[in-house]
Image 1: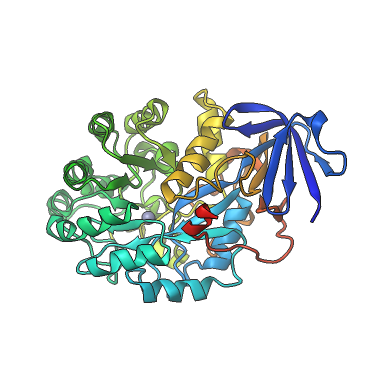
Image 2: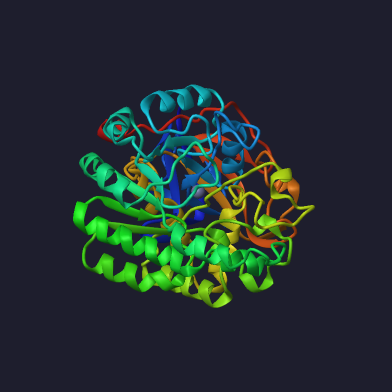
Length: 454
Ligand SMILES: [Zn+2]
């Protein structure tokens, strides 16, 4: 394959937005130069005012294959990702069957992914009760890090862990040098609150919100910070939903502890005050909290206490949202947003004075760092994979079912008007999404950490 030059007035690099030609050779970016310096023998494609962003890295996705492919699967998840400008997914170790808690299960997942992926992917391993002897073998086999739950995860094949379990696992985890991603809610406060709500109206969102109080997150984060200090492992808090934890996280980071924090587009977009009764498409855990809380999360992003924004794409069939009953107690908790996360974030961030480089930092560079693929992905720079998104920041669109592309068109974003349209997505130089079409064949591969050494 010869040289190609992708030219735009707005190329988003770590140094800012500027006119540039991104020179691509095969699967890699060879150079980023002023447009006039594009090599004369390169095939030129001039995108004018459309922005070029680095392909996004989504480090929090539930693909659910093998085992629950009727919920999602590699084929549909990676299509939705391509349509959303995401060129690398890291798959959570649960909701698939078997859960990724030993090497044999990882191999089953790898076989299931072959030939189905439109973009690249990687795997998180699981830390569950009694699997401490599998942690180092999983790391050697190529997982990018580990995930655990401090509260029941909603399915039975993946056990939650308590402090005692963690004390057995953390020495192994620390030796791998890989991050531990923690679903930070403790069962105590959730159970106590739920007890009080036995006879409450569970079609009402406020009932669900009261059942998962801020304190459940705060107590879990407090515990994890102290374990991080004691065992010296890389701690990552997934889907932070309470702004009340920001102060303690900020001081733990200032102390020099290796802690990173993510939140998700839905916590930055929705607010509890306007979620209607029975709107189970908005159910997730921890829950979407108040408008004032949302404001605190934005402040956390602004001051850097929150490092990144990833989707926690967690789809299910429509029937599991129990829309007809509208019961928040029994509905599946999870929000699917791979194909709309970028426009959701751009719509919200733009109104708050943020710019495209902020989006690239939160949604590409930082998650790539977490997943250890930051030498290959997450930036438009020489030597990086040619993962590039052609994005129209000014265009608007209505979220309709044909914009979603994941298996089941269930989404709390349906009917919303969003700003920013993904026009094309290139994954390692291959055009994988083109204005509603999915050209070519599935070229997505698993990212192996050893590639960094190559
Ligand atoms: Zn999740």
